[in-house]
Image (cartoon, rainbow, N blue to C red; front, side, top):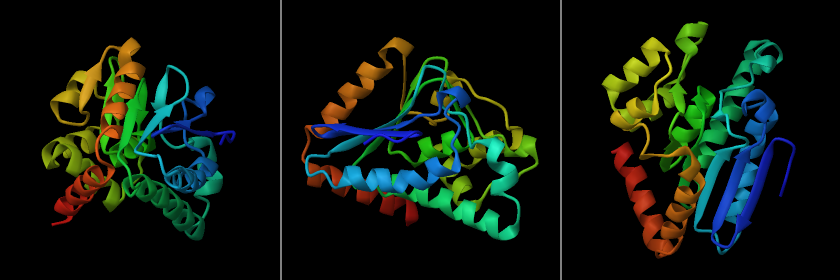
Length: 222
């Protein structure tokens, strides 16, 4: 299935969801946020599915955040803000609650909403040179409780506060050091490495992997 801004495909046990807005560094428009739950649900319907890879189109970005060109209309009033935030949170939950493991293949900028999407994935693999950051403090914006919680779950409270308070961009070495990503690989090897990782997951027993995913999620809520 292909749409203008999201490309969804599958080959055997491996599904792919590609953020496709490369002219804006894959910034997420409202229609992209709205389509993510449906796209993942359609992938989940495939009996052979064992793992989903999320990535950004092109070489420059996984996703450089929300599409700020839509902020004036999308956040024009209280009701609109609530509606927009609910739509975005549904997209996050759809990724978190995907019935099979999800892998974020990160190249280039992974900023704001893009990093929030990556944090919803089970695994994060970054190419050398990727950049990570959460900029609301620099933009005079708030950051909601659920999104802060996801940062803390990934890196712990101290590193989470540094990310949120400074609003600066972090290198792959820094991201690896604080546990923001699982692995950093040479840029040219990102695709092959993620493919190999996905194949290794897909080769295992689906019920066992699913049970491990559910147990990990439950342990974070304990």
